[in-house]
Length: 507
Image (cartoon, rainbow, N blue to C red):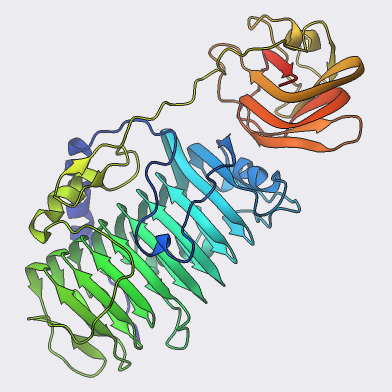
């Protein structure tokens, strides 16, 4: 049985000092889109591409994330959701739709596929709110922080897991994220990165897992052996009691990770699990590899690891450490290509590449961090457009407007005037005297007010059909449709949204 977690105040203080040191060393450029492609086991089984090729929308609330999922044509329509700001219980509610299955108080990626969630701008923080992946496939999560998710106390979310996957999950790539807690089980926290009930083909890369009793597991019990094919590479595990990870059955590839201050145990291979553990750097830790808290033994293949001030306990019942001189007791064949950094440089290359808001840097396999090609941040207002703005000279109406604003201000060609709803939600419409063919809409916000619009829908007023949905202002294209009136319906916002121009185009 797993021993109780004992949280260590001194370790927390030491970790805080490390956070400061790392924070000084790493730059914080903006990110606007996923860079490079999946690695490790996430490249197998058809690969992991997330929302590539689909619509890109912006979300500033959890509700807007759910709305973007629910606004797709189907549960498998590709979508990239760019997230900025703090996502928490107060702004995350259930949204219904045929292409989603969401819930309040958790980011729910359930019974869906082909989705990318990426932090942009000054950063995306999921505060006390977990990300739950269930019955889903082809998911990318990149450049976000998930912190202080609890299973007990208040508020609770996702069973206490920062990121949790369960029930027939396939092909997930989690990259350049921060997964953090503020204690162990007795303080209300559970795992940072958990997989169970038939989860396969997952990669965790260039990420920070910090200040938790439990790093993560693969398999919820000795009988849950349907999980596997997991890659962990170039991650920092810091100030963790155990489970870095805990493996029950299946196969894992663990390379080029930096482990610092593992207090009770580290990689726990048990119940027949097989792990290839190579070129990692373990420092100031205890029992970093072996089978622990069970007599159901696991296996490992080791090569090139550095054990720096690592202590090992004596073998005994339910305690089978691999050290003090770890040797291989199995072989694990890896089906994909990869480049190994030398273990001696792992602390430095990991320090320069891991975590959210660090520029999505990666290693080239020669201990040299590489800056990805620059990506252009989305403009705060849409770029100039070509073609005739069909809104000019058309009519406009909508729901109740705020004092001092006018419906007509959205189709006068002047960003100095605007319409606002009476509250945080509302509808503004462009209308013509006869059916007019439209395939593109541009929503522009007045200067200095950008970012207030949350989730929205474009609706054909003639028949009620949803033409498109998303979050934030910008340009949106959809199948060309002839209609006499088009509605822009704002479903959520931060503060009072303002629309300077509601432009419509035939192409």
